[in-house]
Image 1 (cartoon, rainbow, N blue to C red):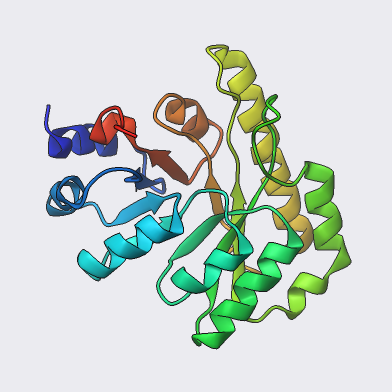
Image 2: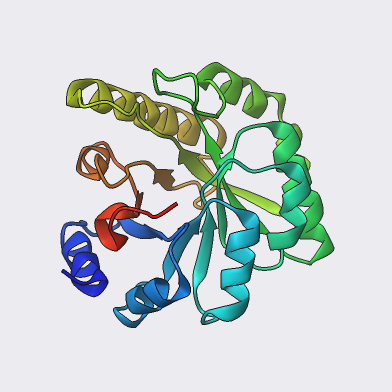
Length: 222
């Protein structure tokens, strides 16, 4: 099946209110253009240099989401155009995004990444660290970022019950933080969870953004 066919199949499975981030990292421009011609506008990248090269050469109505682990010294390269940063895993990173967004006169949408998986390799705040940062309140002075929700990854396992539990944990935390800290902030509405192998489970637990790559573009050539 073609990329366009794969894309249509994934989109047909998404309920109203769930948006698709087509994970295009390591995929060439021609493949992104095929998905673009089929109507896709949100693409996810995990390397700032690669994303910037693509942003400069592809249609300017593409909404670029950064979904990888972000280093503070790379933010300046994408501050002028990135639509959403999914992986904010420290207050320091949030302040640097704010600083670089201020320089280019933008407000950048951000998601707080929460570690809910059973794997040591995943980045993110623990639920308690996330609560503590929000309780501290210093983030409220950052005028060039907008906290729009949470992002997380489930463990890379075939145990669907474990994946479901982890997504449930993230959804429960999202609801708790929404009513505790963001009750007057309608922008706090995004829950980015679910990838090619588990997005159906994520949607069932309230995901609003699914990050799907290999199911659209095929297995990657690194």
